[in-house]
Every structure is written in structure tokens, then in C-alpha cells.
Amino acid sequence: MALVLDADQQMLKQAARDFVKKESPVSRVRKLRDERHPEGFSRSMWRKMAELGWQGIVVPAEYGGLGMGLTELACVLEECGRNLVPEPLVSTLGLGTSAILLGGTAALKSELLPRVADGSLILTVAYQERGSRYAPNRVETKATRRGDGVVLSGEKVLVLDGHAADSFVVSARASGAAADRQGVSLFLVPRDTPGVEVVRQSTLDLRGAAIVELRDVELPASARVGEEGGGVALLEATLDRATAALSAEMLGGMQAAFEMTLEYLKTRKQFGVLIGTFQALKHRAAEVFVEIELARSAVLGACDALDRGAREARSLVSVAKARCSDAAMLVGYEGVQMHGGIGMTDEHDIGLYLKRALAAEMTFGDAAYHRDRFAALSGF
Image (cartoon, rainbow, N blue to C red; front, side, top):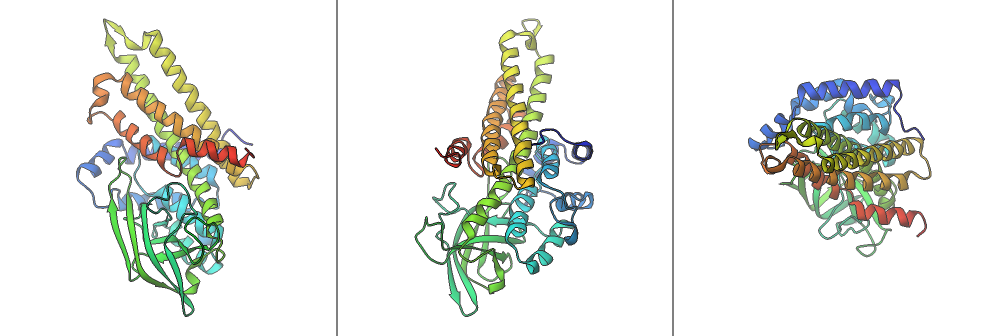
């Protein structure tokens, strides 16, 4: 298991850091928020990322991509997390593209993956429903055969970047009870298909989401992604990849928040001395540092295992998400507290990092969920 980056990966990570620092400071996120931007991100920035090849990192070379892995994607996402970059990389590459890579037919891959790589397609997965919590098998959206095709009816909620997506990979049930693993399939649903209605949702961390209503949406048989009735297993594999990607982004956010807090400890004086010299704050900062480094190793381990197709990949994904969830919350809360009164104001950036941590901790399963999942996968 590789827990360090090689020379090429380090170069990619540095290039991403330089780009994000120049093109996407946190002030840009504030501006998009304050102006109530309809999409919450910049299409021009999305195109610039495509020119750098970011959207093609996990796309195979035969479809116009770079043919790299999740480890390389993590290098980029970590740097995006440092500045809270709002563009839909996790949803398009972690979710949508993963579903097509893992379950798409040759025709679907040829149709969609080149468009992902060149930045002309935003693709996400619509799988959560009201009350489903973190269970991908809890699906009440109906898939009914009609002739040679299928008709979908139901509602999906908290669809990551669904407000801006061009197409959705949707889970729907053809048979069985609401929580059965069997009877669920995935389908590609273009946004402009008759019967699809998208309503944007507001989120704590400024990341986009949506409710997707499906009212008698007619699809051809070729729209199915993966095996008929095998959608839950495909969805779980997709979510593993997306969870690793999100964990990498969380890692970048907590690192930036920690550096911001350290800088404050080195400059803020109280009672005539720097507060960074107080032993209690030194101990708290040291604990944060250790937790971040543990999270970093967990993320690298999970991405490497997924890239290798290792048997233990699912368990390592849960280790990474649990560690990142706990660490991100610790970094966020400690950052706000160590900044004192100013940390409670909207004007200071530390609060934005805490909000991102709060939302990301709940996305794709919180720490408690992944600890329980790890135990179950380990036979307990």
C-alpha cells in the first residue's frame, strides 16, 4: 500500500495548488454566495479545469481522458478543498463518472465519457430518498416496464449538484420491498427528458444540491446502467469511489483551516504575549496535527486500494471517511474556538471551513455509520 505520492503525483498536486491559489481564492466562494449565484459555481472555471485535464483524470485514454486513478484525483481534490472550490468535481467524477465506468455499456461510455473529459457534461447520481438515510438499498422510486422501455416515477432528494447536472444516474425499483437489495436498477436520465423536474436545495456549506422529481419518465432499454436488478451493488461500488474522493477534499479543507489557525496563534497577543505560547493551546494544536496526518494516511490508503482493486478497499474507504469526518469536525471546532470572538463572525473564513466540514461529515455516511460499516465488513 502506497502512503506517499510519487514524483508525478506531487507535480500534479503542486500544479493544482498553484491554480487554485491564483484562480479560486475563498473570496470567490463568498462572492458567489453573496450574489446568490443560480448555480453556485462558475462555468468558466469549470472550462478552465477541463483545459487542465482535471475532468479527464479518471476517464480512460480511449475516451479522451488521462487514464489516471483516484489517487491522482485525490491530489487535485485535496487542493480544491483547501479553498472550498465549489465546482462539481466530486459529483461528476466521484459519482456520475464512476457509475458509468463501473456499469455502463460500451455505447454509454463512448457517448458520455468524452463529454465528461472535455467539461461539456456534468453528471451526478440521484439515489437518496426521504427517510433513506445512508441506505442505498432503500429505494421507493418505481421502474415499470412499458414496451421495450421503462417508466420511472418517484422523488430523489439531496442530489449532489443536481441543480446544475446535465444528466442523472437514477436508482429505481422494479420489484421487492422498499429495503430489499434485489430488484433495483440504475438508469441514465438526461435532464431534459419529459417528466423530470429539478428544484434546487440550499445547503449549509454552499455546495449545490437538488430535489429531482420523476413523473412518468419514459426511457429506452438502453438507458439502464449495469445489470438489471443489480443496482444496489453497483451503487455501493460507486459510493465507495465518491466517498474516497470527498474524503480527499475534506483533507484539504482541514489542512487549510489548521494552517489558518496556526497563523492566528502565532500573531494574536493576549496579556502581552502570543497565545501560541500557551501550553494548553499548544497541546490542542498538536492533537489537531496528529489527527490530520492520520486522516491523510487513511485517504491515501483508500484511494490506492480502490485503484488496485484490492479486496480490503471497501473497509479502507470506511476508515478514511470515519477518520476524515472526526478530524474535520475537530479542526473546524478548534479553529473557531482558538480564533475567539472573531471566529464566530461570518467575516472570518474559519467559519466557512466549519460549515463545509459539518456538511461533508454527513455526506455519504457520517463517522458512526462508517465505523459500523467497517465492523460489519470485518465480520463483527
